[in-house]
Length: 307
Image 1 (cartoon, rainbow, N blue to C red):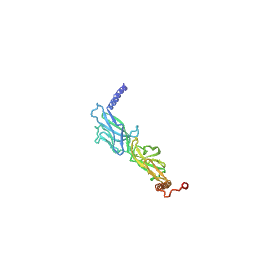
Image 2: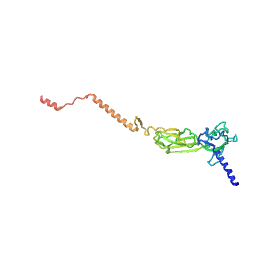
Image 3: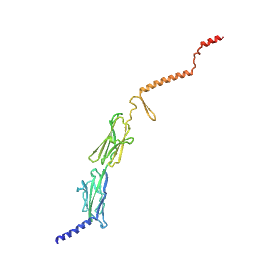
Image 4: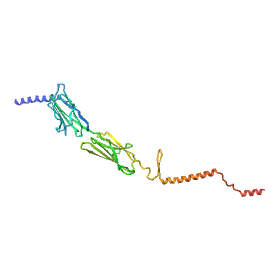
């Protein structure tokens, strides 16, 4: 009989705790996006059932998790009506927060790459308790890219390399290359990503060009981790020399004709001779012949015979 009495006593206590906990629910935004160097908000509110009147929060604990099974590192806490000394850079989103305020959102005042990760919000009220995990994703915009060439002064018809650099971004992005006709040349390039102590990335891409490249412009574009283009920079190749044979370039609306110097000299001589010959012929046609007409001896003899 004694053992049966103990069973009856424990059962009602368990039921009361389960029902009481169901009166309170912590609701958080599943994923939050924060920007490097700015404020980030992890939104969480406490919801209570209609059976709960004038709820009072007894404890709040915000913990940063290193893994789902980890207990986490306390970054902000409230217990027994007092706010614990918060970890630097963390506070409640409501400036004058107290135990009557059901908005328990966490504010990170100066977001760093190290702040990215999962956070657990634990709430205990006089009507029950609950907890929820939310995630913070950190982003940082890449700088406007810079482009330069190796060698600094490109010699026509020789191999060269274009270098594009962009820094200060997060997460790791990519650099892509395009010519003036929007054809992509990224496959011909090599990119390197280095992460600094603050967690931000520096991207460097090298595009190798063979001598005699036919394009006058190449564009370096920086894309973030989501695939969105952030910025770009265009590099203009130096113009080719007029001619490697020392000739003259004739530019027409439809074509460019390059004539070697030897050919030009030969054509000039021929044209000069042709012009002088034509002038002489014109002069002969326009002037009368000064010599008298030839005599015909046979005709004269016949005339004398007749007389």
